[in-house]
Every structure is written in C-alpha cells, then in structure tokens.
Image 1 (cartoon, rainbow, N blue to C red):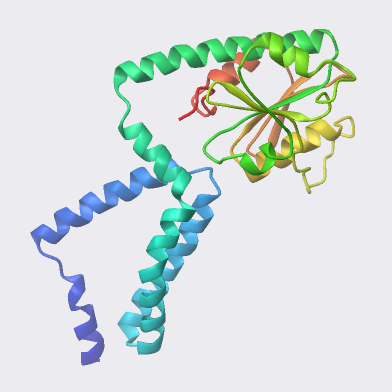
Image 2 (tube, rainbow, N blue to C red; image 1 turned 135 degrees about the horizontal axis):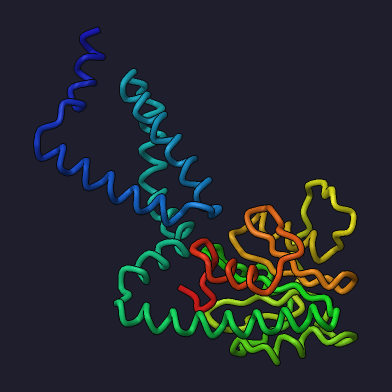
Length: 260
C-alpha cells in the first residue's frame, strides 16, 4: 500500500502546477476543436488510450510496460509530427491570419461560391451529371492523383466545360481547394453501406463514400432527374434548390473554398 501511495504523490500539485494544467487543458481543447470531424481524431483517441495505460502501469509499478511505452513515446513524438502535419500546418496558418487577411479570404470565398452555385444550377437545368468535391481539413491528394491536373481558378464556365457530355473528364469527379480546381476526372471511393434510395446512382454513392472517409463536402447533379444533392459526414441531402446550396456552401460547417 505504501508503494502505491508513493506513486500517487505526483497527483498533489501546487499553485504553479494548477496554472500549468489549466493552460495545457485550454491548448488541448483548441486542438480538439481543430481535429474534430477528421481522421486524425481517431488517431488522437488511440494516443490518449496509450497515455492512460502508461499512467496505470506507473501506478501499479509495471516496469516493463512503462519502459516499452516510454520508448514508444520518445520516438512517437517524431511520428506524430508526420501524422498530424496537415492539422499542424492548418493550425499555424490560422494563428498567423490577421483580420484583414480573413476579410480578403472571405471575399474570395464568396466569389468562389457564386461561381460554383452558378455552375451547379446550370448543369442541373441542362440535366448534365456532375460530382464536385470541396476539400476540407483532410487532404484529398490520393484521390486527386487518379484524375487529370487542372489547377485553374474556380469558374462556372470551366466547370460546365469539364462536365460537357462525352468529354474525357465528364464521368469523373472535380476536386476543389484553395479557390482552384485541382483535378478533374478523379475516381472517388464508393460507399460500402447499403443505400435505401435505389434512384441514387454511382455519383451519389461515390459522394457518400468520400464524405464517410473525409470531411469533404460533395455536390452531385443527377443527369436523370436534374436534382442537386450534397453529401457530408456520411449523409446526403437530396433535391436542394439554389438557395439551400448556397446556404450549405457558406455555412459554418462548410470547408472553405479559398483554402486554409
């Protein structure tokens, strides 16, 4: 019993320790806000589980487990920098943004939304099928590599040209990020979950599949029904109008078209 009591002595902090704990808690809270709705969140939960096992091993004086976990943590810090590189880059970028820069980006974002909404509504009017993925915090590089690079600013005319029937890029997906059309003709993963609505075709299944694996927002135009649908977070909203589309793209949960 005395050995366990000695191990618990580190749990009696002073005033300086309490202030430090509060600061660390605030930093972790901000980090969790940044990582929410990303695949990195699952990795972070796994890391917390290992930390819990480490403290339990320390409490029970399991020397071998402590040694193995301490060795893992020593090299795991370097691995974490690689694994969480996109999130760390995003966090540092946000810290460095001034209000003026955010204002300019907001103007660029609004312009990109206008171009995207115009293209989607015109494609729906013409009954041209289309699928457009807007990258969020999770990168879409692995999917972008399956298509053809475009690297052109987001414009309604360019999007309508890409989805012209019988063109080479018509059947694939367009990926947007940073105010640019990164790729056209990309192949997206199909959802592995059962889809109750049998009217949903391959584009809709691909939109759901990508939204299940990433935090991207995916816009789909059906060439059979001319309906506009949006998939995000593994769910799809079907048959929306122009105003609802603009509301989704400009909403607080939508990925920014001008990047970040």
